[in-house]
Image 1 (cartoon, one colour):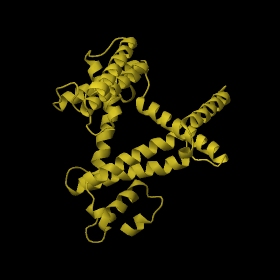
Image 2 (cartoon, helix red, strand yellow; image 1 turned 90 degrees about the horizontal axis):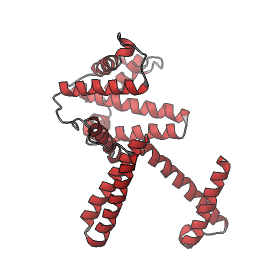
Image 3 (cartoon, one colour; image 1 turned 180 degrees about the horizontal axis):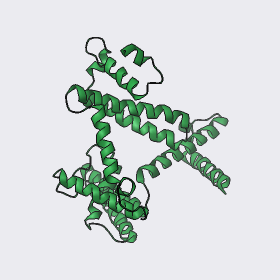
Image 4 (cartoon, rainbow, N blue to C red; image 1 turned 90 degrees about the vertical axis):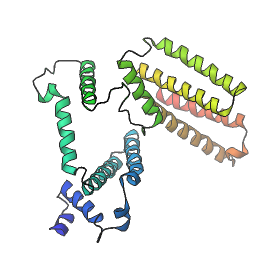
Amino acid sequence: MGDNLIHDQNAGIERLLEIMRRLRDPDTGCPWDVEQTFQTIAPYTIEEAYEVADAIERQDWTELEGELGDLLLQSVYHTAIGEEAGHFSFQSVVTNISNKMVDRHPHVFGDESRDKSAEQQTRDWEAIKAAERAGKAQKGALDGVAMNLPALLRAVKLQKRAARVGFDWPETAQVIDKIKEEAAELVEARDTMGHDEMVDEMGDLLFVVANLARHLGVEPEEALRRTNAKFTRRFSAVETALAKDGKRPQDSTLEEMDALWDAVKAQEKAKRS
């Protein structure tokens, strides 16, 4: 039965679950897979999630199909480890998330009206989540925000939680003023204090910039990814232009590279207009 299932390309998720069971078999499985734990697999899970986001950003749908499979494998991996330890199973994980989706969408699966704005639905969603946290004895407004999130993403989540209880600037202008204040404090730390103080002030500045993004309705992780991609694209174009003259960046002056950068930037703007 096991071998037939493993080689049945139409067997769906059951086939993948059986493959994982065979990989994790202490007697006949793969030694590497058998040794893995929640802790050793977690970094791969994070990496695969980023690769999914990258494929979406590049609109590479063929690659996205593969990356989604890799991410699904991570869930299967963790549930296999959980099942072996008696914590939970794949089916209990599926039941848990299914129940959560039904409970959090009473306007779809219950008797609440669907006639409400996306903003109202978001408020309702947050109210349901708050009730769930209360049921888990999470008393503080910031309880339950995962520690291992990327720092920029966690900053936004912390700020959203604080804003729900009224700890927030009401106007964007106040956030911009705070950015100026934090930038001045960073300069002061650079000029008169030590490295630790500079790290603290840089963190404060980044935290307020993340807050500004939240106030503007901009996802800062997405914004920074786009700027990273833009920088990579433009710098590669500078390298290409230099190579035509038989030069490399390290053989060129900053003024030369700046001029080429401005030319690349102007070409991109011209294409968009």
